[in-house]
Image (cartoon, rainbow over all chains, first blue to last red):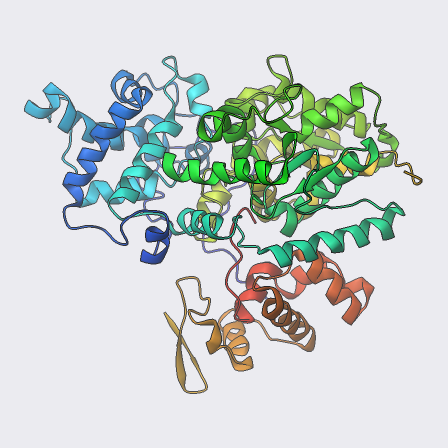
Length: 499
Length: 110
């Protein structure tokens, strides 16, 4: 028998409950610290260095020069409080340091002390503080209680981007040798093997072959899952969870069926077998670039014409917003397609052109809602119109199933809540935080479920899928109620068996 | 951290996974399961044995789907589902069973 979790699971009662403030409610929560081998593999010191205070303060100064946005975010907060009740981690835990303004201020008070005139001369008057060991500990705890989902930024009258502040804090901590095990071990695996899992080419080949057998057996259609095929038109870059976990793999099967039915030539690359880019989470431009360049290298090596990203939230942020500057120019690709393109855009285009047909009756046993993933919602776009990242996934879901219902408006679209596991927090050592942080989403789901008996929640992000599979049961749902959008598409797709 | 197995102290990481994978012997699984209050049945061992075989060949744990298919073949189709694997290993087959089998923890968005 499994031991029950050693913390209280919140009850998904009435939406939306702003909790009483509980100081230090989560001051015990922190992820495992990266070992020297994980730190050094991605260019950081193996352990906390002797002169860490000075190096950290210098690094903070360097980052405010390098990223001008960061300096604006540190300077411009007026403590209006608009963000306080917008963070899922505050709503789920009640810890006041999880109010975005307070979490940011852990860095801001140090910035004031060393980089502003009043902070240098009258620190007490302006709430400026020295960088002490206690402050560093708070940074480590609370900057790993921010999933960089940017919901608070939507409500900030100044547009302060909390994610940038959290990323900067994590980069400073990495620089002085106090990194997070989960993210840093994973980034090292991507540099070495090509994906977050550390899935080597033979295992990837074996998994893909197995999928070909399964689809042939289930649907009688010889759908291929090509690997490292030179001269293919499309390079599919997808999270490695799509090869490994459930319900992710059903999404991968959906993409393959779409490519097959539309007659598109595609391949996966073992060199760039990861869409996610954890360099973003730790604010490390160098690591983010090194991960992104693998996609360019694979595209050149295989001679593809297009790059398509699978269902992965943060990957799409990096792909949509930064891929060109990180690893471009991509002038060797077909200029008729966006670089990169999202699988949802591909499926949507094919649907509109009549090149694929979806039969929604195939999913008549389901009553579905859609969870907007934070980084797709607030840091990217799809299609050619503003808001396409919200409408395109819904249009393909509605074309794939007859019973679709949205959760309440202030929890979807750009106001969507993080799943609770984003931004490098999807690790077992943070399970209490993840469970509590899922509360607002669970409340909205429960409310919709009470009205419409929802059977499934679909998502387009590997982290969201794994996180919900883990936490749904804590809130009285089943783990398999979270599914991939392209599972719905794959099941509804009318397949031509003679293709 | 460390666990005592047959009179030897074997080092584990903070999450309880073996630090040195070559330290593994069947008793390791029994001891780890004991820590989780879990009794290992023959069906648990089928999973552990398959994981070890797969790891030896591919240097990685199998995908959940590969595992469920293999277990379905060995124990009957009704048991070839992730639901059944979660009954055996409530912390998740990929993580709990990997730990008992002496494999590294699967990392990433899983």
